[in-house]
Amino acid sequence: MKLLILALLTATSFAGTIVPNIKWNKIEKNNTGAAAAWGERSNVTLSTDRSSASDSWQFGAQVLASYAGAAIEAGAKVFPDGFDNQVFDINVGYMVMPNLSVGLEYNYHNFDADGLNPDMSRPSLSLGYKVNDAIVVGAGFGRHHVNGSAVSSNQIHLGVGYITKDSTDELVLHYDLEDEDTATTSLSPSKWEIEFEHVCHGMLAKGLQMAAVAKVGKVDTTGADTTWSVQPELEYMAASHFFPGVFGGYSDQGGTTDGTWNAGASLRNVHDNFQWLAKAGWSEGDNYKFDLDLSYMF
Image (cartoon, rainbow, N blue to C red; front, side):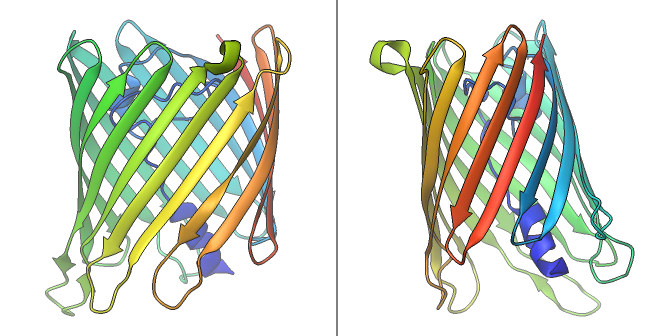
């Protein structure tokens, strides 16, 4: 069970790596500070969710703030049901010049103190450069360290993004360099992943939002297979403050493991500056997850 929790916490979403996240709900944190610096949004969000895979509640809090080219995004998550796990992360971004953004990021996983799961940390640096009004290129470097291990993973990303008034696209290459523990000769293998994300809202008389993420990657070890996934989602403005949605997709982790389908539905309501967002999702193997977010937008 603890290994499953570890896998859940280390699953990474790369949204908002090059260009800012522009989804209607405005509460999803960017992956880098450099991307956050291009956007403007400020809110406080409280969240809770429960997964049948981990059979535990998770609680979280997040603050996003952006003003005059400076951005900060900070969040914390905890598992109180006997696991004593905490996740902390922060992004800081700043517009050094009108066409250049820089970002600093730090992520820390504090696992339960029984010695079975080590703590993990990842500091990183990101840069973004606006070629023109629509095109942004970006890059970054991070170092993922596991407490008690001499092996650390050096990670880089390179990407390009395209911004319009109602849409964003970004194509990002992520690469983890191989690292060797000179004392034990154990390896942290190299791996790569390419992700494309598209977000567009205001379609069909301004009532529909579409978002989709497609990934393909590979761990560079003997016999490793290519991994890939596609995750589309739709949200519809059924009324001025009422947004039902659906999401789902397919993931294939390679090897002998069969690919898995997932699906879900969401419901969002906005009143003045307050918002609640409820989601219920399912994946093969009869795994369920329920999420509720409450936010106030400044």
